Length: 391
Ligand SMILES: *Cc1c(COP(=O)(O)O)cnc(C)c1O
Image 1 (cartoon, protein in one colour):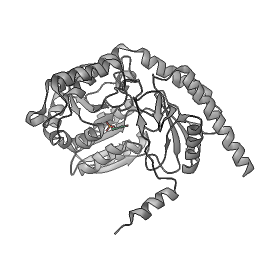
Image 2 (cartoon, rainbow, N blue to C red):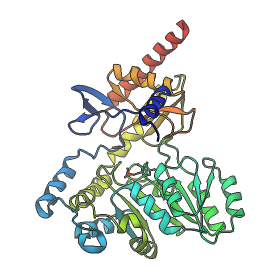
Image 3 (cartoon, rainbow, N blue to C red):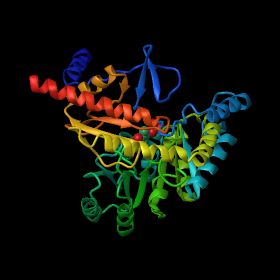
Image 4 (cartoon, rainbow, N blue to C red):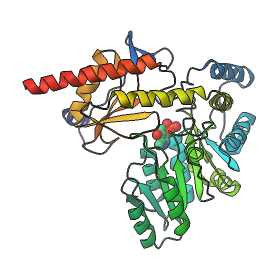
């Protein structure tokens, strides 16, 4: 029998032990942790909607009308008019025929992929895809082909070599730990050439990219009936849940066959009503996207000469790749001492040897706060170099 005390000690020895911090008060640019105020660049609340008064009002209003519980699964008696309205609003927002709302993004991917591919089929997955895509692919029992990050040439070869009748390409649209975009036009072209379907997970593009926040497809101007589009609602949308959008037939198939949709209690109607309010704010408050873009520009120019590699990203996700696990934790702690919370991300969330600081920007940050982060990072960088010189 495995000794978990030893297993935990082994994680600790590799600087891989994770620790939860308890936050008090609302989510925002500053967070209270153990009575200390920290300036946080740590959340996926990219537009600052998690504590938006209009969303809070919508939630309170919905609680008064509908109470708090989801009560039953959607296919029994849990499918509420707030869910139905939200799905129509989501479909029209992203310009696709129909949408289906899931309780979480994790559940969406682990439900959608096995519903679209099964034994004897093939799934083609970018090596940097989110964990829930990998889990969905494993659950599907389809043959899993992992291609190097964004490598269309290798994907082309894998697709050509596959004898499966049903081929499903799956990719993050915006990669969650790198902030770069998938080569979507190229993926669509390969899907067409090899008669495959393309599932895009836009967890980090929805709300952030596109003229009205409709996501990465609108941002790039790509449309194709090969695409099944998935977005999450707990990040930029500020609430919780996820949706998938596509043709009416595919969505109806998912209603019938996505096990994480069929066999779970509907999420509370109050959340669906709040997300509908969030869609209006996403559309109406374009200044939030403008501000995010200007923060990204300021950060990148301020960090052009620190010793760590920044990655080209036009999104809210701005990683600084440090490499070593212990070094990234030292960097994180140096920032913490100065009152900044920027998470260090280690394996297995990112590949071995690519531990990084994941700076995530939000429209809630002020330009002064971004400037302060740049100054703190430069100070910690100088301090670490001094220590290394002495050692
Ligand atoms: C966060 C994330 C998910 C999971 O969504 P949740 O709603 O948090 O479960 C799925 N895919 C990607 C790319 C993500 O970053």
